[in-house]
Length: 257
Image (cartoon, rainbow, N blue to C red; front, side, top):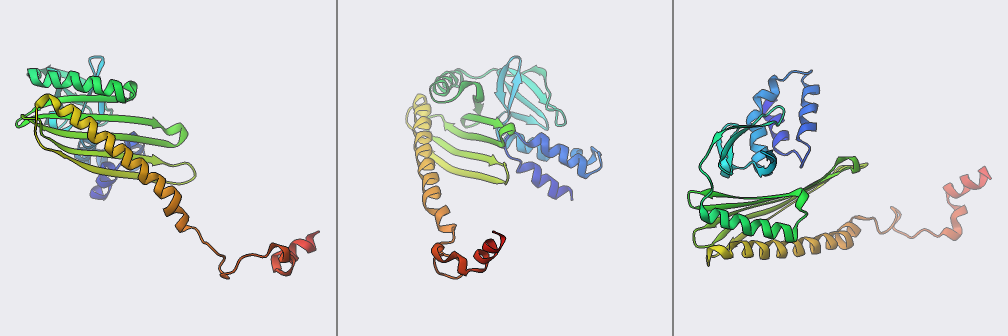
């Protein structure tokens, strides 16, 4: 049972982890034991979706690139923990500050986000890695009162010479009078050039993906969904509404009159 619940946690739509945790508590009669057993899945889910958290009045990101151990992470020269049960962030100590190149990339990423994203719903961070840098972008639109939640999740590894390799994910959940979820992923792989051109390559890749995704959605709406509709009734012939009275339903309606 724990393994199955862990899968539900890992696959939680954007912004809906807390609702799933409440459902787990109901399903397990209010016991926190199961939640404790799937705590690793909670941390894994937070890192996979690049969960934004507030640290010292500013937002940062929880990811595998700034993960230290268990529920401990680092960002902007400090270490912090994220409580698995409450999501509360607590500073625990100092950490090595970002390198000069990471700080330059961060400024460029901030400028790109300001120009192309909604600043109040998007967080971008650059972290030093063993082989270069990680540039992360998470943009969320959470509106459960209107029955939808969505996220743009972009993760890139940047080499010392400006190569970019990663992926862009879109995850949207719509649940008014139904349950529809869109999950789309595209890889990004750009050969090296100049390190400071990496953010430009990211911008180009994201723009191309956005255009392709919009085209795909239009095609689904105009062609794929229409193909699912029944073209003719089960009788394989069109309804002759002028002769509706000859059908049983028509006669029943006439008799009521």
